[in-house]
Length: 181
Length: 181
Image 1 (spheres, chains in turn yellow, cyan):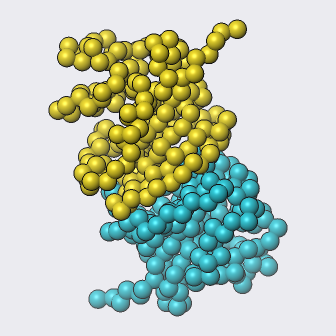
Image 2 (cartoon, chains in turn green, orange):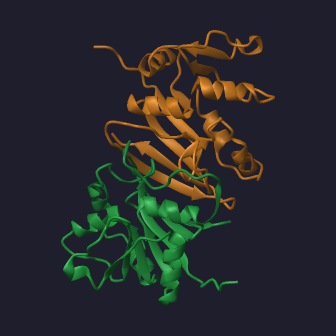
Image 3 (cartoon, one colour):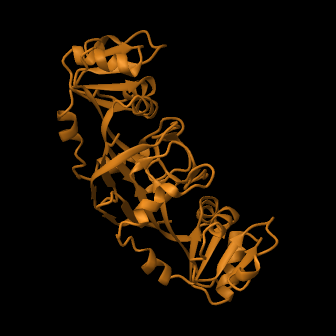
């Protein structure tokens, strides 16, 4: 019997009302106005509460296009193809090619307890592996019509428990759900 | 210059958090518990406010499987293939094979002003034709993983204006949006 360390995955993400986290080419410009309205959507409090961030190669490469690296926690990029991390980020970013379960066990062994799970495909694979404890989903008042979906195919229902919802003058609607089963 | 009658389409629909209004086979059993909790989700007030209901063949055939016909307004089934309405419903249901625009013009000529637009494909085609004034979308706390989607492909963004959000002890989160452009 192996001891399971108490490590949990947490989602904090925005999506269009039709469920896309980015346009098909990864563009998130449509989100920018909402981050510049002076509203506190809780991202700071959330990111202060986590020990590390797991993301996919797509999210990582998107983050590289920004002028600043804005993650202040260790970032783990889930990728079987990525080999090199650009020099300035070598101390902040590691590459993991294992399964979600194995990655979480490694992070637990490093002392992490709360992991931010980011990006559509990675969230989907962690949900399927039942590694997500809760999700804060913020719906943006727009229908994009196409893009990169937040959620994906699953074989079985995942029951959620609604914890609370807050709406903002900008029109964002933010709901927190715990994964129920 | 043709006179455009003031007729508007309105959506009132429940979807899983991942955006499905029914399972792939049309099953909506997963919704039933929420309608039996004694919560007032506003369906009665909404249906009292509308003059007629436009739906697709799928929604109509689903409605036929229920033991009672629970629509108390004229129902228009958008279908090019459907030919016959079962006898007892002949006075309550008509078939329309025209475009969404033409159907709405016909309904306006009949004196209708507010039309309930129901069913995934029909909502999508009315949204694309800019015939929807507002939508009340109720998110159910479950991820189904597959099914009939509420929203679909569009060529351009549709901007929404968030009117308000209410959450219920059952975990339902109901948001009203006006179509902004």
